[in-house]
Length: 206
Image (cartoon, rainbow, N blue to C red; front, side, top):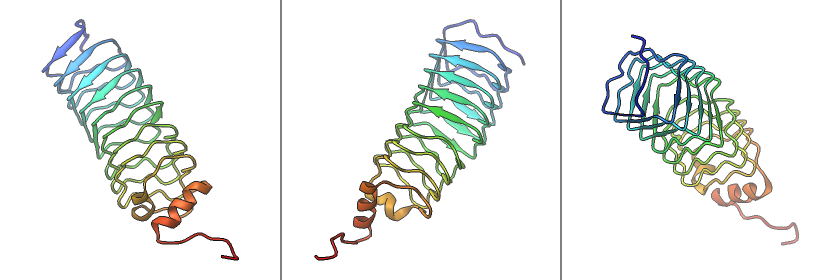
């Protein structure tokens, strides 16, 4: 069902399997809405907020989002391929079994978001705010994580092989809980890595 949105705010609305493809959503508020099975491919949002909304089996591919927010939302089996999010907030939002190939996240805040078990291999995540994010078992191999803030991140069994971690804020647990073969790190991080593994750095004459 093709739907045209005319209101500035929607609370508790049912948008299950509606067709919003290629529409522009500017400054609209959605709270506790259900977008399960909805088609939003090619949709463009600006300053639009989604709070505690469900997107199960939704199509979000090739969407663009500028200054929008997804707070406490649930994305399950949702296609985000080739989507672009710029200056967006995904605070406390959960991604489960989603297709994220080609997704671009620019200047976004992913604080307390959950990407456990998700595949983000090769993604550019540089400079993102990812405080207390759940990356347990996720595939971040080859990702650009330079200058990302991973304070308090949960990274048990996360695959960071070949990732660029230079300048990223990373706590001690990541150095022992994640797979890091081939990852690029800076000198300060090398010291933290050594300390996390019980190594002591010293000069030859010490």
